[in-house]
Length: 456
Ligand SMILES: Cc1ncc(COP(=O)(O)O)c(C=O)c1O
Image 1 (cartoon, rainbow, N blue to C red):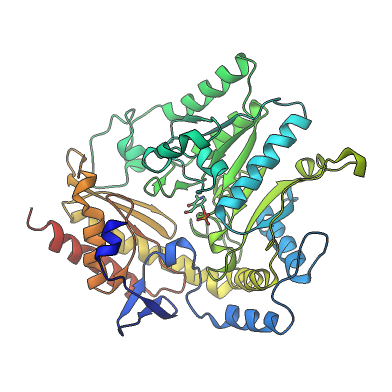
Image 2: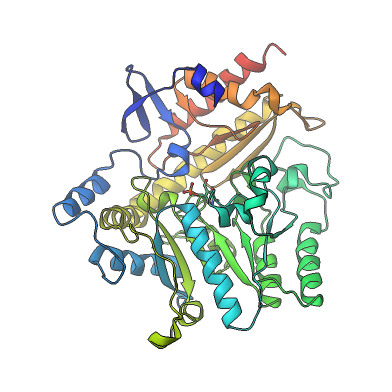
């Protein structure tokens, strides 16, 4: 915070597509989609018009005891997208809230109470991954395992367990020497990360204290440093979770709405959520960030019918879900989200995303020649570029050297805005980004690294 006070911030006043404008007349590429939220660019004509249309009706009405057209339509659309082609919906109910953290809070409460009522676990017990980040409210922090962010809040938290997350580049079980390629592709291991999950569940079940739920960010862990899972990890872990009668909570706050790629489904179909890449349908899913295309704060928690039904009863049973937000189902947000989903489904947009993914992967590939880049972790339209002192030994820079921050500052001087996670540079372009803009982002990474680290 002290550093923030010492510097003059870039004051952002406008945007169009992937470009942002500052008060002093500069233009920048929005290379992290305004903290992972924006999908179709700024001032998108379709979303702008949807919000204007909705404003002529009403901006917000209560969802506590009342319904609204936009929120109901949005829930139906989300259920349809979560279902995937040709399958019956398993997630049939949607609870609206305000941001990623509240969507996770709702999922944790729903899981806890469902599990108790269904006689699965009397006391809620959650398992999540090392390096997990699920938001900043107290429940979300309780299932988070990033020491730097979470340790100081410990007195406020409820206890949860953690289990090894797959992280091939720095995995102690990966016997392969570093190569100039994604560590997932050349790793030498025996899926020890999956065995650890199995062992953790087995121990809890044996002790008569089974887990209520496993909470995961499917496909890749964001705030941990954009760490993708090797293909197959999620489906194996989902099977273990089911085998122990625990619920699977997928945190798709960052990964949802096509961020991790359109997937292998051909034609107009595409994967909306990361878990769909492995054919996994969780019991609860939290979404936010991209839900409104990065326009308005809105979130949703999807649940299965049995979870919903466990909150039904006679009035005098008081079984309702005692949890609600003033802005739940906000009509402006829902109108923006409906427009966002229509853009996501547009076949021309799907094609553009497919070719952008290819251009993104191709451009990033050129970075392997950079000596201070140890790993390039690519997942759809998300990339984590890890800066290291020596790629041959994976020796990291000390966090106090502020290498990630300094490189991002140098990128900003080259007209590209993003925010690092420690020594990891994040590139996450809006879907409307052109391949020449991707080229500009990657060129800024090279120039900034040379400026900051070239003198080492
Ligand atoms: C995976 C994940 N879950 C939850 C959150 C919390 O979302 P919000 O900042 O909207 O509360 C984030 C935010 O970065 C996230 O990346």
